[in-house]
Amino acid sequence: MQDGIGVTDRPDISPTEDKTPGSREKGLNRVLEIFEFLHTTQRAIGIGDLAKGVNAPRSTTYTLVRSLVDAGLLEMAGDGNRVYFGKKLYLYGMDYVRGNDLLRRGRQEVDDLSRQTGETSELCMLQSGRYTIVHSSPGTRPFRISSATGLQIPLPWTASGRLLLAGLERADIEDMVSEDDLVLPDGRRLKLDDFIADIATARSTGYCVTSGLVDAYTKCLAAPVFSAPGKVEATMCLVVPIDTSREKTDELLVLLRQRAARLSIAA
Amino acid sequence: MQDGIGVTDRPDISPTEDKTPGSREKGLNRVLEIFEFLHTTQRAIGIGDLAKGVNAPRSTTYTLVRSLVDAGLLEMAGDGNRVYFGKKLYLYGMDYVRGNDLLRRGRQEVDDLSRQTGETSELCMLQSGRYTIVHSSPGTRPFRISSATGLQIPLPWTASGRLLLAGLERADIEDMVSEDDLVLPDGRRLKLDDFIADIATARSTGYCVTSGLVDAYTKCLAAPVFSAPGKVEATMCLVVPIDTSREKTDELLVLLRQRAARLSIAA
DNA sequence: TACAGACGTCTTTTGTAAGAGACAAATTGT
DNA sequence: ACAATTTGTCTCTTACAAAAGACGTCTGTA
Image 1 (cartoon, rainbow over the protein chains, first blue to last red):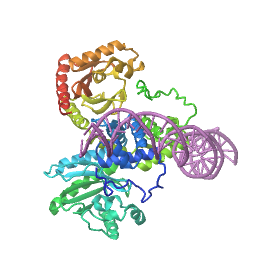
Image 2: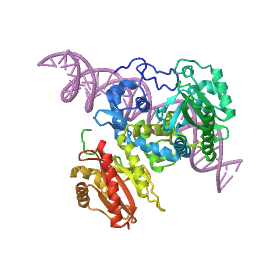
Image 3: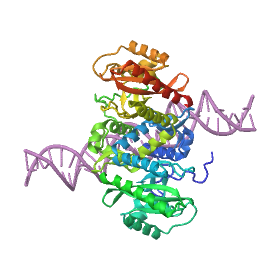
Image 4: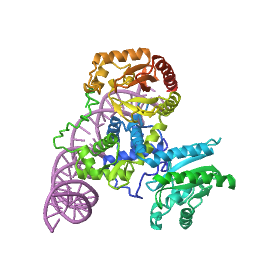
């Protein structure tokens, strides 16, 4: 297994808070790291590798995994010595959906919009300082552009990111966006001031369109979903080919904004 | 603990007081209890009440909740001092679905079957010794009979329960079914031997129909989904009015068994 | 105005869980 | 065939998290 150059970048929420070497770690925190690790690897993994992956002692990992498996939060995968998320997490997740009007209705709107337009559509939210695809519906194009649910991406890379930060103070934005986040996948570097200007623009126009940011072939249209006046709780967005005509884009934008507005009303 | 016998002896879910003789509890276990509690209450709850609910010290509960909220597994509900499941759990749940062919395809089949027949349809699995509704689709009847996703019910109350236990030894079945489980909601008491006989029958016929078990108005048709020859991994079932005609029932049974079989193939 | 109760934050104590390490058994590779 | 790993379980120690409880703040209500 090539565990080379930071294949898994630390789930380190606070920057460079790596603890004193050889110190003990709270069990719960280990568990949280295990979850994050499984979430990024997206596949079942052996317990030994898991211990390495989260940088925890083997014995500790075995104990924790046993607890979690007994509780149903993790499950042993078919072949017998790998673990992955369990049914319980799915059930809790469904509880979350049930208790969350916005998400429930948002998923519906996204699915509908995707069917209506044939384009990939997504519902996005802010999650621990990053842009997160909470639900996505593929669209009907031969090439599927879409990314997976749960994927987390730096805010400056996306149109939605600009809307999600609308209404925040400059200081808050600076806190939330790291230097690395400003470097696009192709190596180009955004200027923080430009990004903040984009946010202001997005805020006043009520939508945002970006071209060729995450990759060179797509354009991203996003519209805000408000939970209260001025408070952007989520965004809906459409991912389309970068050469989509101006007219077509405008047309899609209307549909998108309609649905996003509908989501805002009762929330 | 090498005694394999009491593996599933959860310390009594009933409020009949866990009389822990003034000892400390592991943080992770507290968290697991918090999750179970939220899952059964199905709503946001104040932290103080939560502490009472899981019978944990207030100070401990505050600390744990803070950790979990920071991690995104829980969220503070709108009004500000209640907690419920968080987005992260939803994302992990979606990861589970993605990694689990059976569940992903099962949900689809259930939705389709429900649309096709107009009846309430469910996908069920064994979860820590109980029958669990993993996904359900309402149907189009004026009265909706359905129960919620994630609901857990004693095995003997259901048709699916009889199929899920097919292939197990008598001893295993006895371990899994408590005395209480044999008492139906209306007070009637099943004989364990009858239940075991039902299981054998269900196994050989390849389906199971029960009438008026959970309530007096519904009939439940269930068919097994195999993950390997002889191993029942899940069931699909239909919940219909108890006075559904013999012919109609048979017709539904055919559709149900078709879809359940289709689910079995590739799994 | 005083009271009773819930809320959220701290500080202190001590019971115990996290971790180190040793082990046999199972799985590799040569 | 024989090392070289990896796996899962077990024991023992001590660093530290869970719990108790005190505190100040808000309610509501008597």
